[in-house]
Length: 312
Image 1 (cartoon, rainbow, N blue to C red):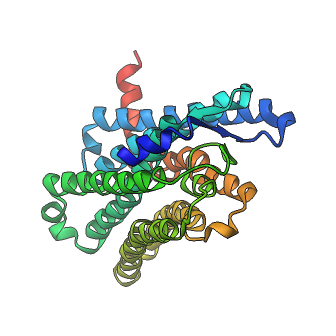
Image 2 (image 1 turned 135 degrees about the vertical axis):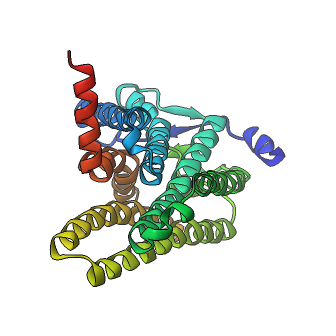
């Protein structure tokens, strides 16, 4: 951390460009993003509360979903409030330590989500491919280990990447052409040789994003193979529908992350990168509750039971 302290003496803060290039749209964007932010928070909080209040949802699947919802709340709360404030303010600065903190928190939650998605795929694999051993394989202790492991790996990766990033000298510019402190736009401001940092970023991306994506794909590939061999036509249709929805969300999250972090610095295009970032920081957390849970029959049944209890 001493290198970060030394570097802070040469630069006290950054300026986030955000969506300044379209000032005529800033109020429209504010209303849209605020609405998505509020609905995302409400949907995820509702799912967590529903899990806590519904005994029939006390299964590993919904335990993972509740924790995934908590991660989504943390992720969007790291990005959206500052983005919304900057849309209405002419003061778009962020302090050096504020930028480092935002980057650390974002990397922590995003990397933890990657492994949480892999853990959820592993849970579905055991439920469909090993139903007789499911309660043994997915014991509560095992589920806790998978969740804690996701957080631990995310924290280690986030700490290493943030320290490496903010040990660089930023004497070229203090203007970040993005709406939050992400690795590629901050790396583009460094006036030192960033070759090692680019390799490190690519290594972590391959290890975390691509690695966990491959594990998730393997799980769902085995699920699909088992469904084809054993299930009835109606069962196959239902299972394929669920798997397709999950894989679409997984592909959107992993795909956009890979596009952002697997390219060399020279190929960054900040206009398209902002759109890609919006996909997994704003839109994906809004869509995920509907795909993973709110379309689920067990969740719908739990909502109806809660309504009957509340209704006079």
